[in-house]
Image 1 (cartoon, rainbow, N blue to C red):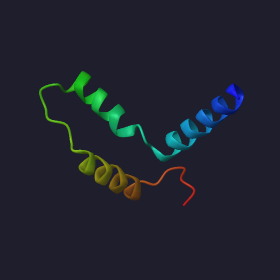
Image 2 (cartoon, one colour):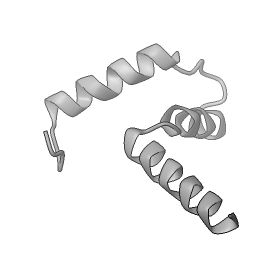
Image 3 (cartoon, rainbow, N blue to C red):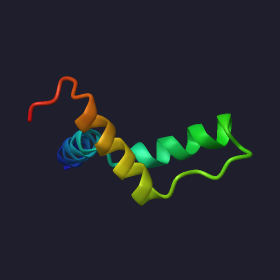
Image 4 (tube, rainbow, N blue to C red):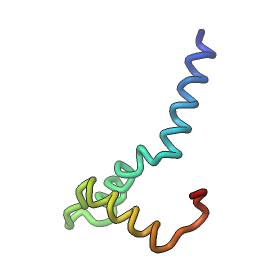
Length: 63
């Protein structure tokens, strides 16, 4: 049963990583470390900026 749980956790992590589930949290950690005096983007603004940048400069995407 432990093997099944670990396998399920691994698949969940992989899919989450591919979908960018932790990207905003990683952005916030970077922002706190490198730009503590500035306010970070809201999550909504972060994703808008990220998708806009991807559309302007597509790299290695499947679609």
